[in-house]
Length: 282
Ligand code: AMP
Image (cartoon, rainbow, N blue to C red; front, top):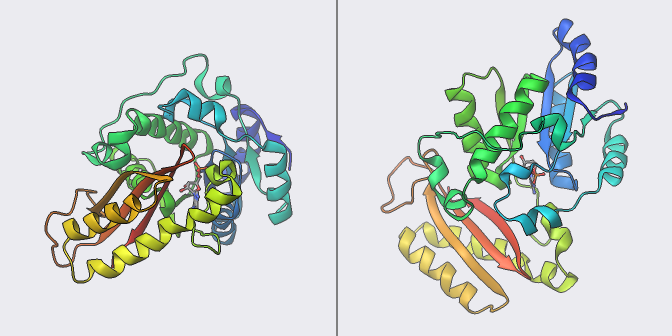
């Protein structure tokens, strides 16, 4: 399958599938693919007749120019990896102008407050950029099912909200976090870590597991204090936030309410690289 660089070229091929009412699975990514991305592709392959992967480093969701410039771009390697998994995957790797047509700005979105929590507080404009690109890509691909990782749990909830508010006919399918054997959540940003930092970063998941254990008996406040104190012991990490939030609303847990599901969310810097992770506290 060739790599499609324009929406027109992609749509010509997809039309054939749509005319035959084939199920289309869609996995949007920013590339620098790893096993986490491949696990989403595998899920899509098993549930759809056609799988489309997009690879696009979306400028409007970066609130930091340096982060955008340094984001790894490895298209050739990505294509090789995808072809090894399955030769029939449609890869859409557009240019910025194919997507934004000379107007590289975000629309603004109201996600009923989900956008004001955690990542939204620390990355102003990020979720407007996410909404803009996801909506555009859904309009181009018109997927039956779209696959999003729980690694970016807040993004997953934002996309669900986008789909329900804009009545977009697509099923949003959540996919489990894929981890390295050390427990570190796979991320394209891990590639930028030194070997030493990558090894030390297993601490993030270890502390999340301890937090989960403590949350059975302790308050959210006490667990948060524990996480802060743990990171204080490790000076090469800078904790940006640790938050225990309710899964639907993403509101901070002040008092545990029975039958609500909570998650611990974390953002932490090591070697100036920002890593995020989360864990279900059920
Ligand atoms: P990204 O390329 O980082 O924008 O990620 C593209 C998609 O892959 C998003 O839905 C992510 O949540 C998902 N993803 C990234 N890393 C992982 C992982 N370790 N496990 C599962 N899904 C992931």
